[in-house]
Length: 59
Image 1 (spheres, rainbow, N blue to C red):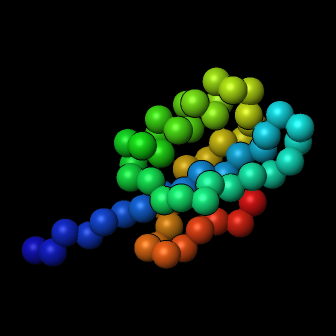
Image 2 (image 1 turned 30 degrees about the vertical axis):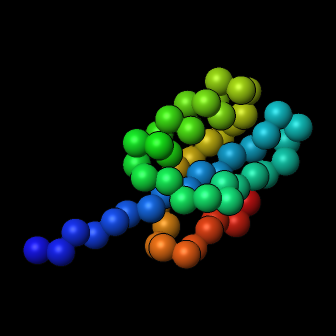
Image 3 (image 1 turned 120 degrees about the vertical axis):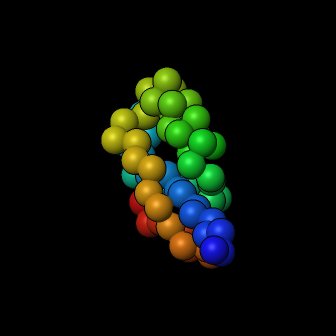
């Protein structure tokens, strides 16, 4: 059975109200940790989004 790697990205709204998106792909654990960091920094609407390799989200 082949192992399939799932990548994740994040989108959020920063403290100034601007929509942002991550420029790197994360594994699930790293994405969850980064989400917590962003929320602790006062960012809102933080979402972890599954993406395909080579794909990045739009803010």
